[in-house]
Image 1 (cartoon, rainbow, N blue to C red):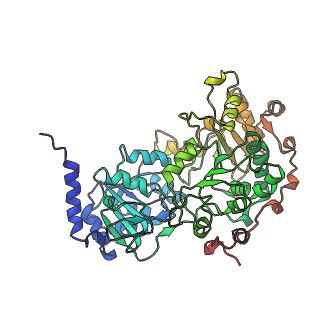
Image 2 (tube, rainbow, N blue to C red):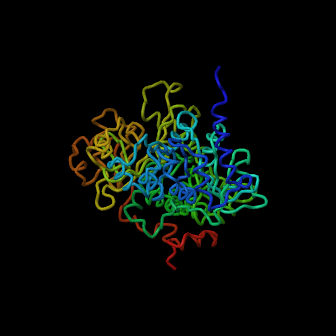
Image 3 (cartoon, helix red, strand yellow):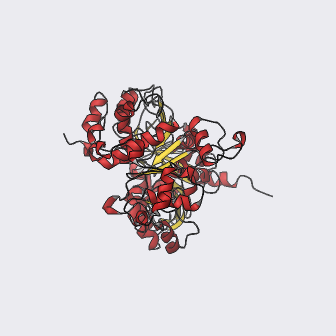
Amino acid sequence: MTNWQSARQARDARLEAGARIANGKIVAVHDATRLLEAVMRPGDKVCLEGDNQKQADLLCAALLAVDFSKVNSLHMVQSGVVLPEHLDVFDRGVAKKLDYAYSGPQAARIATMLFGGKIELGAVHTYLELFARYFIDLTPNVALIVAVSADRDGNLYTGPNTEDTPTIVEATAFKDGIVIAQVNEIVERVPRVDIPADRVHFVVEAGKPFFVEPLFTRDPAAITETQILTAMLALKGVYGPYGVRRLNHGIGFSTAAIELLLPTYGERLGLKGKIATHFALNPHPALIPAIESGWVTQIHSFGSEVGMEDYIRARPDVYFTGPDGSLRSHRAFCQVAGHYACDMFIGSTLQIDLQGNSSTVTTARIAGFGGAPNMGADARGRRHPSEPWILAGREANPDSPAPLRRGRKLVVQIGETFGEKNAPLFVEKLDAISLAEKLNLELAPVMIYGDDVTHIITEEGIANLLLCRSPSEREQAIRGVAGYTDVGRRRDKNQVQRLRERGVIRRPEDLGIDPLHADRNMLAARSIKDLVRWSGGLYAPPSKFRNW
């Protein structure tokens, strides 16, 4: 006779073992490792937060200290590999296999460990892809999550950095998994119930704030004149002509420059109210001047940003906030919004090849993807029309009948032809291909595929790939904005000139932009201190960004 309760019985056995260590749901901090040894089994799928920004650092340390004979060969299914301890668990043999999405701070070490056989790689995912697999074939047996506070029943308040928590808990708690929460403090009543108590099995009071990475703060003082030039090209050559109002900005100084030009150059172009009104975006401090100048109507966020809490609380018309006043972020919902509800993604990358494929992976660094492939993909399930979407679709396929023509999401790659340490942005072959060959991967870790990319912007100009009618035109359009890189120097000058005459390539002078006018004085804020002033003193930047 089939036992339809086996998973539930296994969960109850784990809960019973954990209950011996707990007082109700509360577990003393010095018993955290014992709790993990009680509820975990060798080979378990474990989701450790491990988010883009906030980290369950205490539970990670507790996991690192487990008795190897009791807990080993774990399959980690976490979106962010951010702390050194996230990789220490593999060095120690506690964990064996990894499925993840983002590893920026640990990009070099994760490459070394993959090459050295310390980690068995499942796959490098996008955020939505990994979240989806939590509900299909990567469902966690144990989730180690993090929140600001909990009451004694186990209701959790996540504060501004909700991030991945609801998605992880939903997948784990409703499929007979164990949910353990690290919280800063136990309180009589939480300010807002973000995760109900019936989905939380154990709570560990850390007694101190969890680690949060200020991932989205860019100091205006570090923005270069070249980045200002590419921002001017973007605003006049893409944002304005397409009337892009709903969009997502990737992380980087190029997009920070755009944000800081909205109240100055954007105002001069007469674009206020016509572009950049609705964002799927973390609370970028660089956007404060545009918010204060009345450009931005609404922002939904993947996570929060250190120091932005009071500013967000004071601007509920713009941000999604709860009755307690703090931000309610949600990575899965915001990723969906960026994928389906936004008309444009604009971001940077490390390498672009001749087909427009791009990747942030090199042979020495495996940074993962995060959400860029979701933001930077043409959502083929989309059905609602908008002016930018319709216009881009018409440019890509002018001969198809209008009622049956698919629109196109604008996917823009923006950067300088030579990046950090003079590394060329444009290459004949992505390092991601070489990495796949070295690791015998079936699929190379390409971040955004070329057939999704619609525009490439460099200081050389804009390549509108929607207007290319053959692979050869596409290649020459890319070479045409690749500057003095090897890829750029191998351009066919005659074909590039013909593409320019057709408007496929547009140089700064074609748009009436003088590169000499790309000056830092154009930025609405030229320092972190300026951003604090713009915020009326509400923005409290992390200490590493304070130089006054």
